[in-house]
Length: 136
Ligand code: ZN
Image (cartoon, rainbow, N blue to C red; front, side):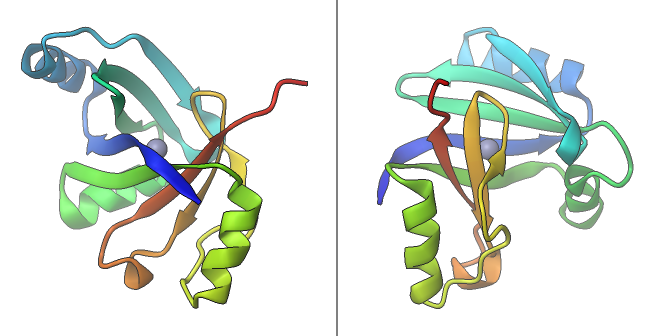
């Protein structure tokens, strides 16, 4: 089940510039940067109240973020909902005929397992499920 809106992902061209802009807008500094090599992105996180803003910049031209910006320009890329059990929720979504981008969760930024639902099935919103990785 989704528990809460965990973060909002925003696609940006230039991470330095976007960090400066969002620091000004949110009146707080980015608290961490993290690269996700498998996705060809570098992320930067802001905390605002209970929610995070995740800036995403491409690190290569094959990155999904590079492709997104090419098509749609900079802006909101995805909404991420924290799941209490991501594997269960993916199975449930599938049974609801929601199109999955990832059948099984993969490693994302911020110590999370993540999986995406296809915007065709979710009202045009790229929908991320995320769950904190269990410590092992
Ligand atoms: Zn995200």
